[in-house]
Length: 84
Image (cartoon, rainbow, N blue to C red):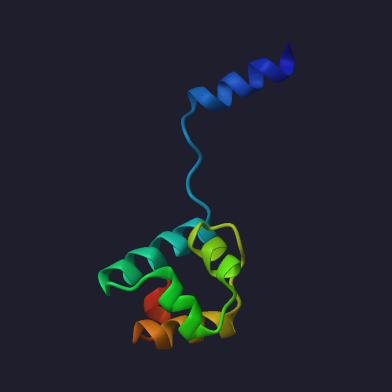
């Protein structure tokens, strides 16, 4: 019963705040869409595997600095502009 009570307490508190990786992913997706680019165009031009790029946008992967640099080049912005 104790586990159930603690789970209900977490649900009552509301959703947890997004992780830094999730914030980054949402920001990258928004920037990509603002530039009318598909995920495919970005990951191909950046030389990043499809699955990796998708996981970055979903906030499920830690992105490497070298990947951020390549994504920034594709989006034609400075790497600091990618950070939320």
